[in-house]
Image (cartoon, rainbow, N blue to C red; front, side):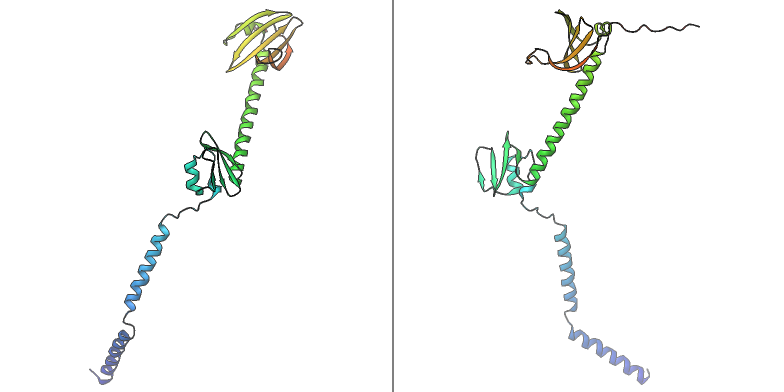
Length: 213
């Protein structure tokens, strides 16, 4: 081997040996960093515990569920009627949250009330439509109708008690040629109920026209 090459080979070997003495724990540090990174990754995968908050309380929760999400109350009525967190009250009905003065519960109560009101309006519109259909039926088709009814002669006309699609109505055909339909309410002052339809009394169905060629 030439002298110059041999010299460079010896110098390189010395540098490698010297470097290992200067940083003998470099591999250990790499292992430590690797383990730390793995631990951080594992910790990030663990489910985080949700913070206790009264805004996590929802309608329909039991007392135990409320305490689980909001913590121990500042005051417990011990009668399952309300809990107190600071200045906020949580009310119960039938052992379940029915309302309260937190932002979340106030929004839920309003939403529930709006939905109930909407359903009531829709139900009323359906009942009014049913009353109109009953009032516009001819006497002939009414008496042949598939739904149950009772009829009775009254002063000045004829009254029918009709059950139509889960609702009960009174139809009053007066001798002066008018028909009125009431939603039955036995507690009403007139004994009839709310007036939903008034119109001309139709007696007979129109005869079908037969066209011959």
